[in-house]
Image (tube, rainbow, N blue to C red; front, side, top):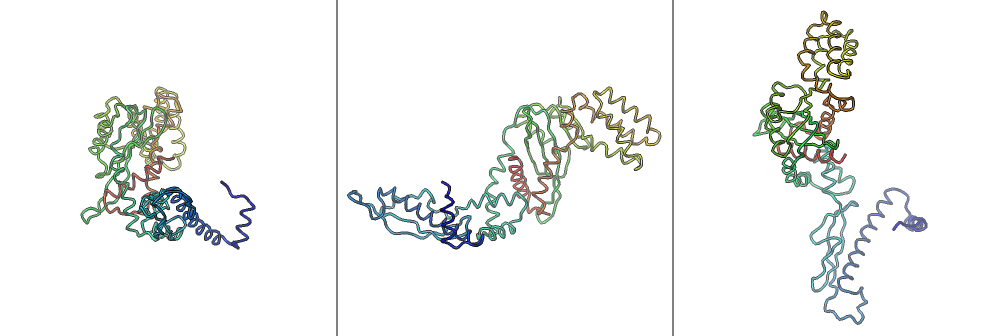
Amino acid sequence: MPVAKEQIRQIISENNLNSVTDVYALLRESFKDILQELMETELDATLGYEKNCKGDLQTDNKRNGHSSKNLKSQYGEFQIDVPRDRNGEFEPKLIPKYQRDISGIEEKVISLYVRGMSTRGIHDQLNDLYGIGLPAEMVSKITDKVLTQAKEWPSRPLNPVYPFVFIDCIHYKVREDGRILSCAAYVALGVTTGGYKEILGITVGANETSKFWLGMLNDLHNRGVKDVLFFCVDRMPGFKETIQAVFPKAQIQRCVIHMLRNPFKYVGYKDLKKFASGFKAVYNAPNETAALSELENIKEEWGRKYPYAISSLENNWEDVSSFSQFPGNIRRIMYTTNIIESLNRQYRKATKTKSVFPSGTSLEKMLYLASQNVTKK
């Protein structure tokens, strides 16, 4: 129930509030007093009568003093007096026995952690904002509580069909047996038949190889994915054969932007803008026949001057021609891997404070928490 303006003015007048600090101090004291009164009311309900108002009620149970309890809250730490009854029947619902933290501190810790703040930084932030002195070791223990979910999440069942699956890698440094090793986080992002993005899996392993990708694709298949219409990928030797070994009917679309970077290396700077403009006509063509015709026009115009650029385009044509079968709204989804690179930026943002992860498990925990945060959006 909102407080009336007249009541607010009276509170300001009676408590001489002149600053935000004064307001916060009042809220802190009021919060404590309200909790105290609510617990007294809970005991009244348990006993069946208010204090000093037993009347003719027949009961052998009655109040039996208080026990002090230190609480952590969003208003800092304070002491509250928990009422007791003689028969020990009173079980507080508002603040259950053994609970000493009512601040939702675990959610705050995880939220700060997934945004890339270090355990020491979280300790300082909680102390500055809430006056809660939470050791850095405790911050680590709180985030470790999600490890069970983090291990279950990669095994959850998936949809049988995904029209598009984007796959990519992010590289990290991990400490193992006293050595700092380079490892890769293999990320698969799917687009459902309803048009929603879904993080299908993240697997931490050795540096990017087709063998490891084969294992991850088999894992997707074992979790229920029976068919993928299009895989959208960056370039990697043997990638096409790896995908077709698990999903033989899937078409593979290489990122057009990544593919263009190679031929553009052979084009002089003064001609680059005009060359790129000519290639736009290729991937904006209404169908593959028209696209090949535009490619032939580029070859006639630039073939003598930049033969390596043209041969690079021709050699990679099969990897970028799939999207020519579809209208523009579908092409916008599949012609580039921007959709998964945007996700990777979120992962990098969450992990930017970690130059080296103490273990592969800590990296998996961080990526899982970041995934849950991204999924909310």
